[in-house]
Image (cartoon, rainbow, N blue to C red; front, side, top):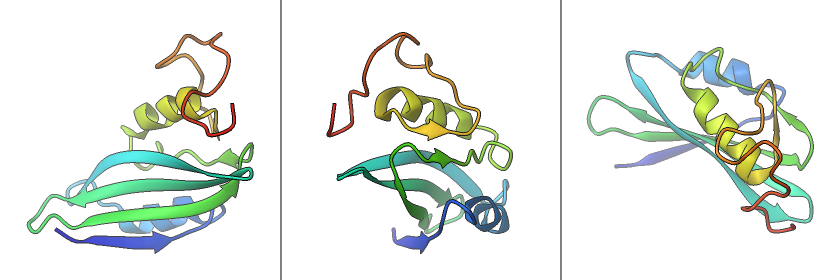
Amino acid sequence: MSMKKIETTLETLKADIGAFYKVDEHHFIVMNVVDLGGNQLDIQWFFSDYAQPCEVTMFTAKADAGVQIPSINSIVASAWVAEAELVDLMGVNIENAQKGFVLEDDFEGSPLRKVK
């Protein structure tokens, strides 16, 4: 299995994923956020081809913590689950995603961030 990495920006993310994603060809695996420290995040969206050899494609964008990250659930309906999880666990600001999916909505902090 191979992986293709596509650099994007938060401004072009929806257009880039929209041009790539085909519901009958790609499976949305997960969204991930890596805390790079120093208020920097690496936001990642992973897709797998349904057909062999099942290549994985990762879209990645760098952003400052606190910046609103666009939601892709208008393109990939199931993305809301990964987005809500990252709001709770990483404390990121994702468009239209609410706290309280994984952790109680009054939970203080972001357990997976380097800086607490």
